[in-house]
Image (cartoon, rainbow, N blue to C red; front, side):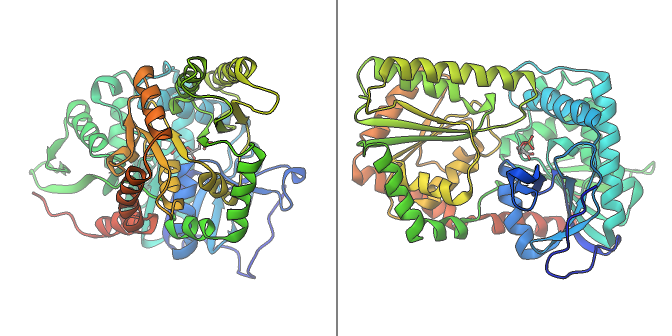
Length: 485
Ligand code: F6P
């Protein structure tokens, strides 16, 4: 068993001492084989860690989560101003709870059933068992009256188990992905248990107002909850309100300061220039950055771009598309299929349109450090975010934060939560391929004046709503006592 060394000379964690605890499926760092990283750790993928890591690094506290390696037990350790409390998962639990119930049942169900969700009782059993384990770990680490903030769809039963173990705690829950309308949620055989699990939290936060409304409608419909305004009230036999759970939207954001700092860093600026040169200094660089996930609309984007090349509306000498697709959930069948589809389409587009000097699509099946991401944002004239459904999409916000000179164009799906805040983006319905094509052409040809007007408006929003503000808004609301309405 590998036990990481203590950093910063801090003593090991004493359970029961933490006043503030975040609980999420993944820790901010993943265990990786020694040959892949110097210290055996790598930053975990996804928007959740991007958003929460800076919050936790500045406020401190404990973080309970899985360390990404099956069948490995680790002791708590200290990292980046946080106490990390690893929760172990067996290889079978990874298959049933993580790849199964979380990512083949809930993920497609919560993302508009873009892929068909699968319902298996063995997966549900594993989900319950693992949620209990996370709740135990948090209960053991929490000080009396502590605040515990549970994150995302993998852990929707944790508020209930935690409340049973530790009624003294203040419990918040934040859902990073969409919450589906009751007409879709109804398919879930365990819909009552999920809603009741969430309702044990004092505050349930969502990305969008529409997610909040969907949840409240489901609470009313499936557990007969008394919903008043944004409150769900539980009453005793005498009709006295004994517990109030509130639901509200808290759109998540990014570490704006970090992105701005990197965007002004001479090395990053030089790297952006280098990227443009390496591509042969085309007039326009288009960029897509996504986890390789079927919700992200990567195939729709490639289809639109390929057709524009075929019709010669865009010439391969003038424009290049960089598509970063970071590896994700690679053992899940729908993800394997997506990778084949995307790579087939990229191969066909490049085979048809490449010249000796020019490549139509630079497809990069890698993850990159944030410095390289910001260099890509600086190099790109047009950012393409064409998700079919997305809780928020932080890449869109990072692009805007990086564009300090108010240039560039953001093509943004109306089905991404970010569309609620970035109203001056060029909004698209990615299912409408002709509409997507004309919006890409519009973005490529946007006048400097219009580009600047739109970017300024978006930057005003992002610069005043960073991730610190998001966490403060949520945690302040969580601390205030709910008055029955
Ligand atoms: O919010 C989206 C999310 O599912 C996070 O919960 C998760 O950590 C991230 O995307 C990446 O996915 P995964 O942990 O399955 O690799």
